[in-house]
Length: 218
Image 1 (cartoon, rainbow, N blue to C red):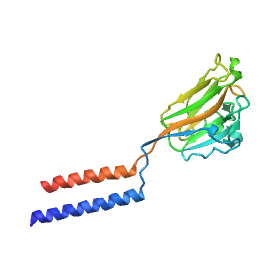
Image 2 (image 1 turned 90 degrees about the vertical axis):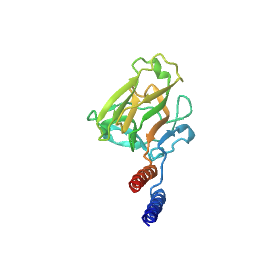
Image 3 (image 1 turned 180 degrees about the vertical axis):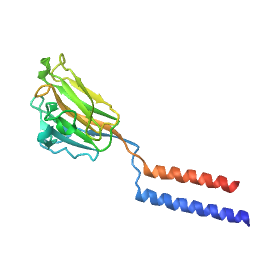
Image 4 (image 1 turned 135 degrees about the vertical axis):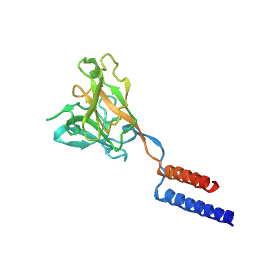
């Protein structure tokens, strides 16, 4: 009788776990554990608004304390292709804060694992004073770190992939040390990791079932 009762209780636990798992798959949809998002202005038309093309990032042309404009597709005067454009990197009224930065701004919904930006050098690379730099900020808008590349000596039309990985980074600003910058900004990609709630629920139920099974056997 006791063995039959134990089997019945275990069956109820199994049914309850199955119901909870089914509900979790409906109420909490599973999302891929990692995603690589790519935004390529070359796939759009001149003037298209790409500022909210992805739910994971907001793209804006920043003017520091003077405000910002939505990132739109521009026709390159150098190559004739579709690009984000060229921008001056700098600060207005304050430094080391995202809201004071000038350039091509990317505000991420969550900290990306890495960011890769395609840059096409223009004929301005012949100026040794030109450079292309970036500012990285944390979730509160404070400056984390900066970096730059010196395209001097490169060839006009040459492509360069700028890859950045900064822990706890939530926003990036790109631009040139001179205006316009020595390069045009084109396609960029970034990787984000998204938790999988349904998988977590499944794992939790599995562990709970193992614990209950061991207790019943004892």
